Length: 302
Image (cartoon, rainbow, N blue to C red):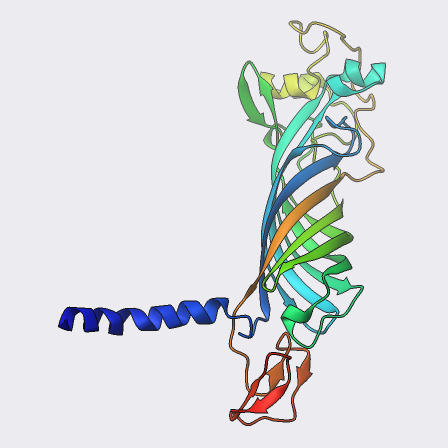
């Protein structure tokens, strides 16, 4: 009997905490987001798809509302970009024979504006809402390609005779649709374009380097892998691109597009006295701790 009483004394606080965690009227000002989707590359090489390229994409983030329609969020994305001249329709690109793939990491800070305002309590938000977003971020990318069954990072090889940074600023912007599926849960679908400040997501930008400038045979191969002159073992649709010939278009920066489906969960946080709704939307005239919210979002004395 004593053991049962001791067990109840120990477990009751945990049960109370769990009940508070899932309670609808608990203040929720932070939103945890997680999702997956696709990533599409746009650059000098052809992507495997047409409009959308179904390369993997995962993301996680935190979001907070600053007003009934404005929120900010911080997000981390991992995704894969891929391009291959073999998929091109133009004969000149097929003959060029370049390709790459890249594991990418993007961290961003984004502002978001909703079309419809939230209610005075977070769970009274609209069932369907649309939003636009924009912000700034940093992207880490690392283009690689294969030779004799082994993957090589292309940036250290300086295939065009130049070095470039594998970190670049990006500007994300796009549109989304948010669906309320339960008091604490949303489903969001959004598409976001990323403007970058590099033309080397694919390791292709300017002109062919002199093959005699490469001391590393691997670098010489990746500089022009489909050339008979530079790679005597090459087969198929060979090219005759020579030193100074156009390899890419440096006038246009590379970019990418992320299409995501996300789950958004409202995390419980006790609001400070006098706050209501999302905790940042309105101030109540009743600041005493002897007041609390009722089911309709109003204030009543304890």
